[in-house]
Amino acid sequence: MTIHQSAIIFPGVVIEDGAYIGPLCVIGAPPEHRQHTGPGYGVLIRSGARLEKMVVVDSGTKERTVIGRNAMLMHGAHVGHDCKVGEDVTLSVNATLGGHTTVLKGAFLGMNCSVHQFQIIGQYAMVAMNAMISKTAKVFPGSTWVGNPARAAGKNNVGLSRAGISEETLSELQKEFKVICPE
Image (cartoon, rainbow, N blue to C red):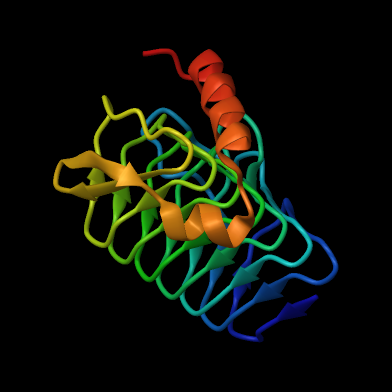
């Protein structure tokens, strides 16, 4: 693991081998939540995760905040308390996740996008630059979302192709998503 000397790592943070924490990152600070005081439940950064400059990951209020294997969090990304960022996820420059958000495997969140708390972003979905995912949006696997408030704008053909996801696999992912995130 590599941790830049200017990074601030709070107690309760677990960083697996192979992770990278860049300059001026703040990892595991107490959760920003009105009803929670104290240090929180910590953060887990999985192997291969890369947190670039000035990334903030808050400690959880109920359980650890998690950054998945091989996730890429670019400059200024913010991950709120109790979030789960999945494997191979990309949070682009200044992407912001409200607390208790789950971002599933392979999703890509564009520059300056915002995701409302308690949201679930499906596998291999793409949230466009400056998009705002509201509390009522259902971001299905393999979909592309644009605008403010964001709306579905078709399939994430590039992301699905890069990941080698077939139509059959996508259909299965969408069925699973409907179970965890009913309409």
